[in-house]
Length: 372
Ligand code: RAT
Ligand code: ZN
Image 1 (cartoon, protein in one colour):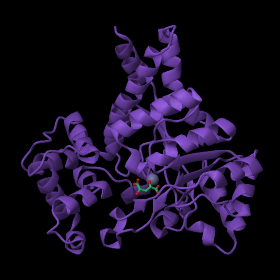
Image 2 (cartoon, protein in one colour):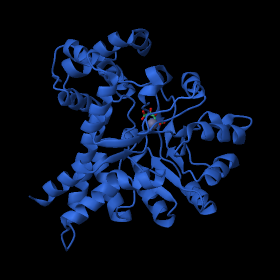
Image 3 (cartoon, rainbow, N blue to C red):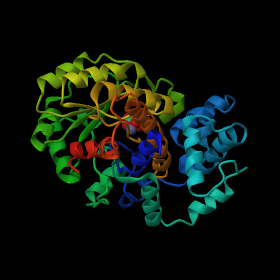
């Protein structure tokens, strides 16, 4: 076997612990999204459809029901054009994994296939096909539908870890009490926020992280609603100043920070911060970074600057089936970056070393930070 085949094999076999998704365990009922209509109405694809078909007004698109939206996306991005973007290629990978035709003229066969699936069987098949053993949800107690399920005493599938999302909770008048209450109820593996700029979170957040020994995840660089007409598909990004992250990590050496940045321009700076502060863990190639070329470039840079002490990718999946493509595609890019790095070593790696590194990068380090 060539070096790159040995690496690909080890990366394919390494179990994934997915650090950040928007998936829900089946116990959350209708919040657990899966199937072809959900896949096609993913906001990444909505943005691409409205770009490809500028005559379709966003308001008219959103006024359609989900099936009609999915039909329009299929027509625009799969029938009239080739699925070359990463988000469309992902749908093709998923359909192919289930033996469905990504070049079908319509969605009849795909819909029939998913309609015949039982949710429990489907979950097992997707996790197996994706090679995922555990994943973190995004749990927002200010969302009424989700809150009601937690308050009814849900016991999620143990492979679905809770992660307490505080974007909206931070504005609460009694944040400390709210955090204690939701940490007790959800038993989250970390607290998380998506922000434009890095800034120190309220004291209560850092206190809660310390008291419960939980990392604080910051996803940095999103600019919400740059095109409000696009709804959930309308967010943009910007580069950010990482000096406040250095201060935060330096002032709070007893708090662990999981950090990902949305701008390609910030990936190098984040590596430098992580070299200075061991309590900062760079993770994932987030959202607009989740493209094969950028994952390969970013992973290569992180390997050169940090060695195998980071988490190369998280899926950000919103639809269960997306785990299949997000991880198949990411494994390819991570494998390419790793074999290039090994190829540059004076002494070539053994199989045991390759396997150890692949396991650490795909799931081991995430598992350590999440107490898995
Ligand atoms: O990647 C996404 O799906 C975004 O819409 C966001 O949800 C982002 O990942 C976030 O967690 O803020
Ligand atoms: Zn997300």
